[in-house]
Image (cartoon, rainbow, N blue to C red):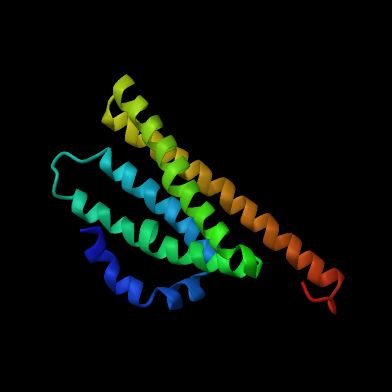
Length: 153
């Protein structure tokens, strides 16, 4: 199902990422995970889960276009393959192992409702701190541009 949802967005993904911005896509992906997990905690029947899987448009398809685009923009030419591989490893190995282990531990210790709500809260917390980081970074860049208007950053 995820691939079917994402195909139309992959076709226009470069345009979407350029309009929204790579770092904003990262933030939206975190929030989409939170909404999905919070929604899973309220499910009584299985069919609405198909609608929650729409999050894969942001959390997989557009996210990876944004990750590769961001890596391309910040990486020196000789290290692009290394940085792309590192980004994939961090997400697919470290991130999935950590999230799966924490979620499994929560489900075995409590129940699925608590586990999904805690994971949603963790995603919201990470999104908040990442958004705060982006805000502070953009504000400091604006201050630098005001202080040194002729200098290119």
